Amino acid sequence: MLEDTVTRTAHSVRQPQDLLREAFSRHGLEAPELNAVAAAELPEPYRTLLVHDADMTSTLKRYHGGSLVLKRLHLEQGADALDREVVLCKESSAKPVEYGVIRIMLAPFEPQAREAIVAGEKPLGQILDDFSVAYVSRPSEFFCIPSVPYLDELLADAGVANRYGRVNTLTKPNGELLAKVLEILPGV
Image 1: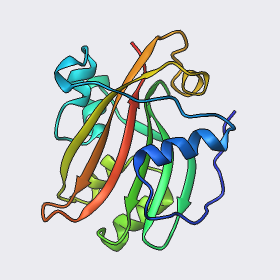
Image 2: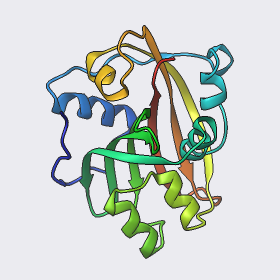
Image 3: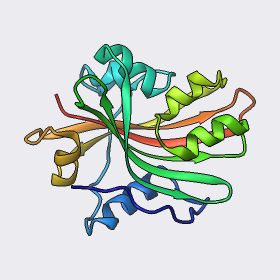
């Protein structure tokens, strides 16, 4: 089973796709190819779950009808940013509802919100809500990703042919970067 990895230094140049490659590389795996899909071509329920300007935590909470918990797989913290690999699970059943790799910029957050981010116990969307952080969500890419054993295990959906996801950028209303995230949903 996967274990949380010790905190290491993060590099500020990493993009979500780089974080995905690094996550797979830590396990001796090659990251699967992300195949671009136009938003209008995403099948349901993925279009509803991915094509919006909200954070995924609140979207998935509404869709699954309950609170979500964070399963932290890896964390790297630098002076200016925190990278993490996570699985979001439905609290009541522990059912995985999202796999993600995320780079969170630390400076834009107030000290208490920053402490919550570094603690790594809550999804970023929950922290944004808890601390009333104003943000803008800008999904920039949607993709299909083939089934791979690593994600089969994490998302408990072995046997699906494809999964869908997005790359999203969260900023403050003034444009200051809060986070970049690559989000993959389990197959249905």
